[in-house]
Length: 343
Ligand code: EPU
Image (tube, rainbow, N blue to C red; front, side, top):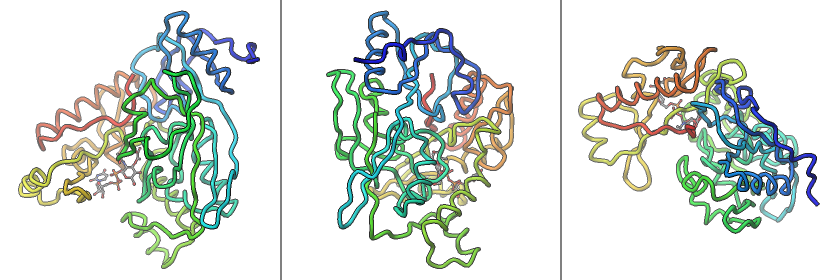
């Protein structure tokens, strides 16, 4: 039987410390989900009372622009272990409520490299597949084998292989069908024939500057941590949700036309012939870096990051984001798409 003592939701619960922007908002109801039974009971109660519900992980990809009128299900499933080992791979399963960066550290400590490029990404394991977290030349999809989720349509726990997750750049079926699946755990394959991934320029430069030719996983981890700490604000000190916009993908024709007008344009060719533009560069060119609008500000080290210097609300952040979108659209004819979930 489910533990009903544990599933008594709390009313009017503050979410300020549960979102990394640190903006004020309350949930009408809040429930910490530490088992699948608690999750089922919470969903059943929301349905009975006609309440909307929202799954919250680390709150690092969420912009709360007002109070939430429904039930917040705060993912607290814990545990991580080696579940299988073959000649070629270690298989690790981690529960959705685990902290992502701690998982990366733990795998390295165990001698299972492969996640080091994804060091210091804020948030939980359960949130990682939603936007297919990626940084410094590696995406989660390259390591994920399958995940388990609660299917809210069939009310069953299902196993979803990577092939059906629809992973793309900052994209997945979980992002496109937000209320369908609640991720419970993920299983990752870490290759025994580990090879360093040092394709990303910042990372390669940082290692070269230290005179490191063939880095170990620990050296990559340290270099990624150092680069991130230099460019991205620590959410514990300065509220933020990482990159606020996706890097826009444009056609080769549009990229050529932009390049003709802006020879310094930063763009990366994609496998399908399209180009990814550096949103940070577009925003920077519009003069937004380090600038404030109301109580919200653009980070002074990375123009793609919007920060809460202390008193900003989600609405302030949104207003700044919209002003940036207007300027980038007017100057470059490119519409920036927000990356976090705006509520
Ligand atoms: N740039 C500027 N001005 C700036 C910052 C950057 O002009 O203020 C230019 C630079 O020329 C730089 C280029 O933009 O070469 C790209 O900047 P950066 O290397 O910092 O990466 P990004 O494209 O802005 C992406 C991810 C980050 C990830 C890094 C490293 C997205 C939306 N963002 O940022 O992910 O850490 O690459 O892989 O894809 C996140 O999603 O929250 C996140 C932080």
